[in-house]
Image (cartoon, rainbow, N blue to C red; front, side, top):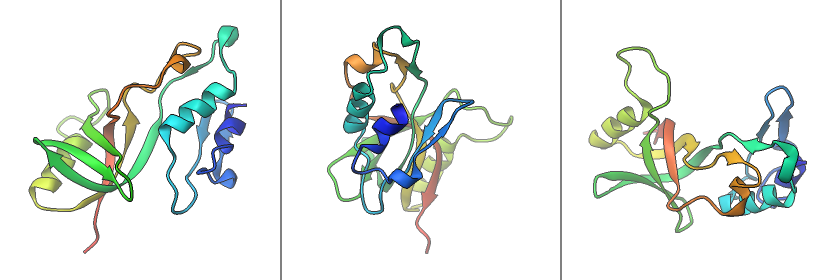
Length: 156
């Protein structure tokens, strides 16, 4: 049902929607040239009526946002291409990495320091998780924060 609710979003490519039953993971991609609005996604999940005594929950949501990363008061933000929307970028302190390896966020900061143009960021959206219906009662706070897992820089 959640998969069907996600596919109802007009920004989502219906052929890209997949459900991994073992893990309960729903994956999807936006239609080419479109954006997936997180407010509409929240509404779509709510519309599935997966609430009450189902024991259902959302553990997390991972996104890839495309745009330009700029620093605002030394806090990096990704401004989404073609919109007024932006994501604040932060370190994923729960991410596992090998001893001595830098976090993706630290590497992103270094790329910005070198003057590289960061054009996309992948990571977990902070605050997008919890049991239904509590999670579905209200939209998670804004500005949205992406806990950085990976990023891409412009190709020269």
